[in-house]
Image (cartoon, rainbow, N blue to C red):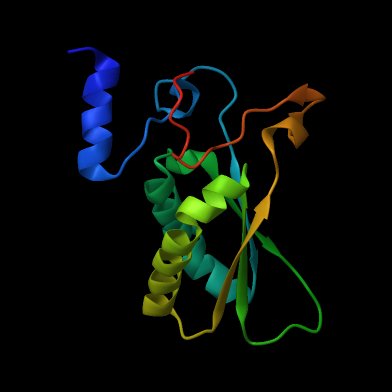
Length: 147
């Protein structure tokens, strides 16, 4: 059986989808990056940044080092916490957004008492550059074409 057919069976049985080679742990070159912007209290950020990073990596089929969680400092905020997750396509938000939001919300509310907004921002791959060069960004495992 070809590796692709075997992978297809695995995908159907687990709900997982092919992860491009450049996002897998053995890939060489600049790592893919998913950016998560955290808007909330510093204490909450200290408590939540690593668990959020791990859960999002697990949900997207990526390495944890592919997830960058950074805190934005704002003035005049409320007691709520916001997470802005950057993905590469509307399809990723459509296919995985609710699942990600529910998992992250459960994770956060197990650790701290807060209302949590999970929002998504789409930054197409064609709009992501590193040092002026097109940049591979992390992709939720909704892409099924091998690369």
